[in-house]
Image (cartoon, rainbow, N blue to C red; front, side):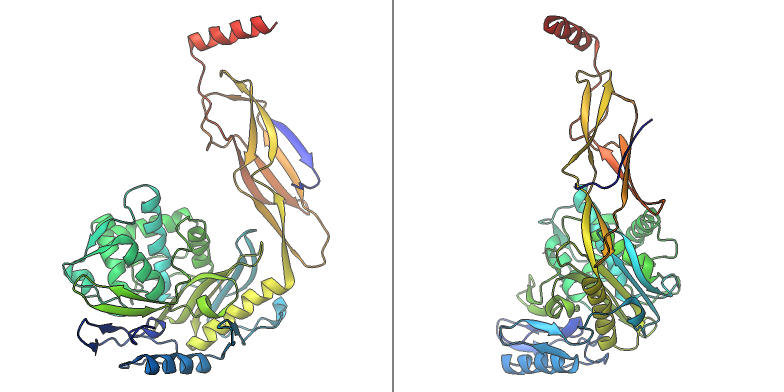
Length: 447
């Protein structure tokens, strides 16, 4: 085994919408009418239902919602979160939620936790795993975004937050994904689960298999919606792992920042939906999030944001009210942005080593890190991590460009804090008989 060591590598149409996913209203071609939907509202954690008949009332309700949630809307239609806007230190992060977890996704560093491994009900944050399995199915080609999904009676009859899908009607798969992300639609979750896996039970098996793969040792999913179930639980740290996983998907980010939109039903109805994640509108740099609430779980939220190279993920479970979950996650993310910086230590675009190849037409290949690695450091700190590279003396063909051919180790204070696979960017085939002859002839001609 060859080892290399380096000190550092520079290397609102007519008011039909759902406030915070808590209310669903329909507008029909001939008139507007209210459809019953009484689920959790993000306004001070209360449960409310209302009937909106015109744009003015709708806008007034949004303004009231913003005021109660301590949101300051500026003249240019941007907004800042008043709560937790100042820079915090780790000791100053105050959490009243039952459980909390803060990490930085680029580096993988855990920065704060409170009872982060305590098993608790997490309500609709379960849908982080639901979306992860959906994204995986898209990546493997099992489903496509333009595929039409037939809604079963079972799916259309789901309670809680929903998109009010028409029974026995077809919707595009992408439309259903959007309603899950924006409005936490339980009916859409079940419709997609049945389409992908044949049943919700089979789909949940996939969710638990993925959780096991990601090392989520304190998690068991019982359904795709997060509706109360005795055997359904997770932890703040486990949900952060799953959220970090979906952030790496190419599908993440397409709908996460949609604030309000109209869902067009095949029957001609229109249901207006509003994002349950207020940070999507009011927190600078937010890239997405998933809320949750039941009387068993309390108010929950997993949320991410990006500013420059910093990507914090904050999770709270069991906040006493909706305002608290948004304030506490904002405080945690602001702590990261105020106190830390991310430095690119290993770049996936830089050749890190050259490996000799045996049994192939080529004699060597260049090796690259499978992904970038960022070193998260406190602002003002100047220490650099050490980089160690390990590559076999010779690599036998064949191998594919995704195969691990070595590794990069990031070492800080004598401890390996991260390992990254080294890969080739080309497939290398094993040399056959005639290839061996050609290679020998070619070398003799050069000589």
